[in-house]
Image (cartoon, rainbow, N blue to C red):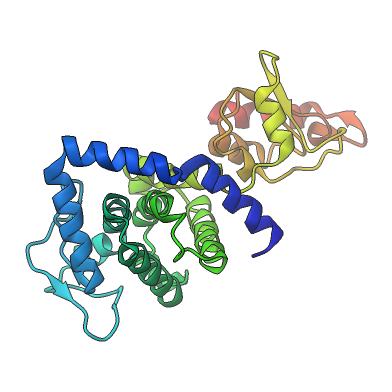
Length: 301
């Protein structure tokens, strides 16, 4: 595992993965208070160990009543009875949380091993490619999937089945999801329905696990009422705005802004305010026409 991935994995375990004693305490509480839910998680997990898929959990968006079994390897693009909704539900991986729950409830390594086997199988068979954007890699399902992966892995992280190689591939997979979700054009259902909420929930979860630059950490904790985020020292250059997509406090955005890129910056990040300087200058002097264009662009957004 690379040094970068090792740091991310340690962050993940520290933030998300309960230690064994705490896991056992939670499992005992669940067995006492929610025995029916525990039984359903175990039933689902036992079916998954046989590569049988039946979407029967209360929060499954597309529930099914006909089990689908794969004898010769899982087909992640499988369509049941001509209904593509089966494919979408299958690739949300909500059921992997059941495997983590079964592992916590029983301590049986077979459940964690099944999770790892199916996760690696999916990563091998379903890398991001353009043609999968409407099937196994829809943005809605990718957002849900990222969240569900994290929940499942949190319950299995201390299993011997989760080797450093598995952890690295898990993190590589999350990064691929971050790219897919972060470059989503935010049109259609992503903009006008709860799809966007589910998509960006996954992206938000990933952002907390993958690296966050130290400068942003300091900015979050800085005691000023408002802060200004710039690429540094008035260089007039932009920086990676994706770092700020879920910045948790109001800020002023600066750095390389001009009338052309200002609408995208406001639309994408919704900062508290913007700071323009060289971007509205001509030959080192403030240009009234450019200033008017920048103000007009800001007001349109």
